[in-house]
Amino acid sequence: MIINEEYQSDDDVNASVVVEAIMEQIATILIQPMHDKLSGDDQMTLGLVANAIKILGEKAQAYDDLQNGDLSQDWKN
Image (tube, rainbow, N blue to C red; front, side, top):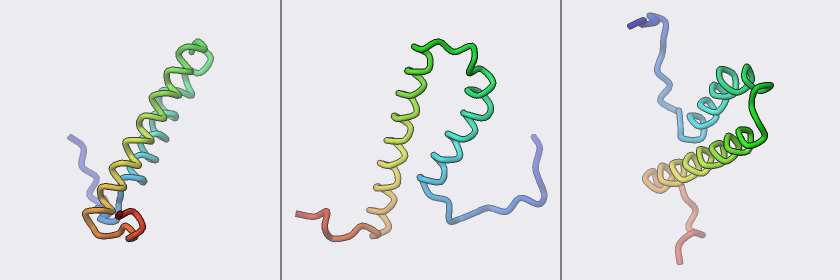
């Protein structure tokens, strides 16, 4: 296991930031190098996967906001 001694934890990371970082790494490491080899169906499937990950991130962020009391009162009936 490689440990970077200069690593500093960022306690302000939220679900939105995590999803953005995941999507960026998937695109950089997997999708961009394979772009010419992906069929139309593959690209469509990857788009659906990206949308699913985005939705999960939004739900996770909403849950975090709810737990932290960061939601406005407009969402309550």
